[in-house]
Length: 96
Image 1: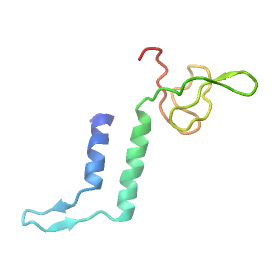
Image 2 (image 1 turned 180 degrees about the vertical axis):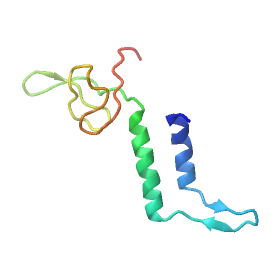
Image 3 (image 1 turned 60 degrees about the vertical axis):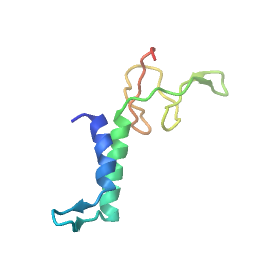
């Protein structure tokens, strides 16, 4: 299963009620179970690469590149595929 497919199904599963063949609800997720779904969804969303925000200049005149998710400054080397602050996957491709 792809991350994209899991991200499509998890919210539907979280928000659904399970119905038996006779039409009775057999399970409604507790708040804790919904929190588990939300945590899984959030973790998977961060695995989908996101472009950094446009470069900015800091107060010292240095060009900085903020993370597209948390806004923290990203290191300027390709050793990081993920933001070291929030874990967001970074799309560093120059195209698109």
